[in-house]
Image 1 (cartoon, rainbow, N blue to C red):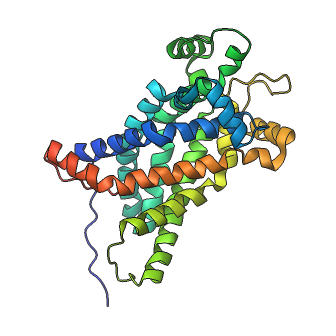
Image 2 (image 1 turned 90 degrees about the vertical axis):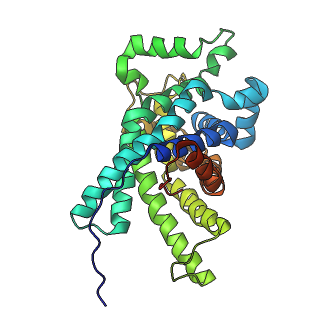
Length: 308
C-alpha cells in the first residue's frame, strides 16, 4: 500500500519554541546542571583526581558556591542562546536534507548535527572557554594571589589573544556537538524502538513520561562515548600550568599530551558526571516540558510546536 507523499514544509521557528527552550535550559543549568558541569570539568582538568577528589577541590574553593563557578554570566548566556541557534539552523538543515530525498530519520540527524556545529561557533565556543577558565583558574588563588574577576579575565584574554583566545578549543567543541547530536538522536531512536517492542506500543501509541525519559536518557548517556574529545576541549581551554604541556595546543597535540600523561583512563576522566548531566537534561526537558509548554502558551498565546 503506497502512502501519499505529503508536501515538504519548512518547520516555522516560533518565539514560543525559543522561549520554551531557553526557559528549560536556564532551569536545567541553574539547578543541577552547573554543579555537574563543574565536577566534570574539574575531573577532566585534574586527571589525577577521582570524583571524591574533584568534589573536595571544588568545595575548598567556596563551599556550595564553588559548584556554581562560571554560571553567571557564561553558563546563562550559553543556556539562553544555544537553543535558539539550534532551532533556527536545525530547521533549515533538516528542510534541505529532506529536499534532497533524505528520510525523516536522516533529516533529523542532519539537522541536529549541523545545528550542533552552529551552536559551537556561534555561542558555545567562547562560553565553554570562559566557564573552563573560571573553573580552572583557582590554581592562581592556591598560590596566594587574588584571582581576577570574570570580566577582567575575559578582557585580559581578549587583549592578549583576541577572538582566537576566547574561542580556544572551539574545534573540539564543534566535534563534540556534532558527534553528540548525531549519536544522541540515533541512539534515542534505537532505545525508543526497543521500549515500544517491550511495552507493545509498536503502533505509534504515546509513550509515558517514564518511557520517554528512559529512551532519551539512554541516548544521552550512551552518547558519552565521545568523552575523549570533551577532555581534549577542557585541556585546550584550561589555565593549568605544566612545563610539559605543548604551546599553542591543537586538538591532536592535546590528545597526544593527555594520553602520554594519563593513558586511556585520562581520556575518559569526568565521564560519570557527564552521563549524570545528560540524564538531568533529559529529565528537565521531558518531565518539566509539558508544564513549561502550558506556561509559555499562556504567556505568548502561541501553540508550542517544539518537541521536548
